[in-house]
Length: 449
Image (cartoon, one colour):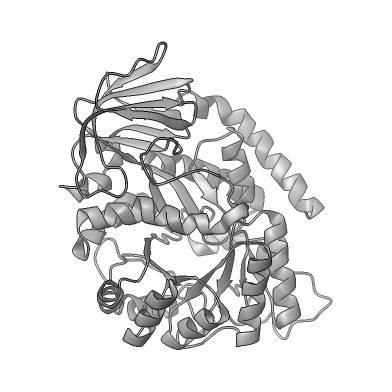
């Protein structure tokens, strides 16, 4: 790793240690935790399993029984027929980019940004999102601090730097920074590993390998025009087929996969041909392409964005705002197509550059009921998202079953005051309705007497 990044990581970890006591006060760890008299949504079933007792030992679900479980010394949580469900998973999250405006993020010192991201990750976990797939930005220091117990936050499946082309989504250089001088140092976002610009097959190969070397569990590429960047119209297909295939080939040699930011139908089809298996956004997918995705088992990672109202994204420049209106206008159509052909669908939020929107992460999950039943939405945000994340194979930073409540699975659990299969709006207000939040067998919230 770059020596400068090593110094920054150490600096961040030291500062995290200073604040660790404040974070740790809320966490309860025990070798055994027993949930008594709970109704279970197991991540897949349409009906609750009634009146169950669940024993967690260390970080695994040990037993699920409809009778008394003997567990001497266990911390006992009396559910009183509340609903126990798997921890929520956001399949398109940006750990480093969700809480400040884009102008502040791009100008921020990396150490300062990492501390702010660690603080925001605490809030993510308190919303019941025990796992996120990070879709770009150098979150690796924050992830490592969470895994080490220095700060609190969700499990993070990191992409590391997202890889894009010159004049592509993710090219955040200034308007006068091209033509590029080969002797000019990388701009700051590239130097700290938020993004990497790669043109031509050799550079795509190198940058993809660098992302994996940094610790990415999957590769994130920019495959088409995007909203937040200024130099890439939405109709653009980014990367040639050979460049696309180069990224996919690197992922395959590392036994993982490529997730692609992409919107246009032509770009989606070309990336599928190259072998990519996770299409992010895809607001302009056609019926023929939806059929192709279903036939090839390609995932569509969707975000339930709104065109207007208090939950619509607001950008700092009119170019991005106009792009946003164009892409979100296609959401109803593409959802109808993907449902018609049963395309594998993942739920993510992609909440960017706005702390107030990030705080509504659970509300965006509840928005799925416009198109899906509560069962379909909850299954998507637990079992289905976990299935997608596990495609990282041996690059998986958290071996074990996620997104389900079954014996032997990892103990990421939420106790809900109510039945979210009957009322999905419960997930929109975690402060009020999530009375217990557990990740990896540790209790991070418990408001029961």
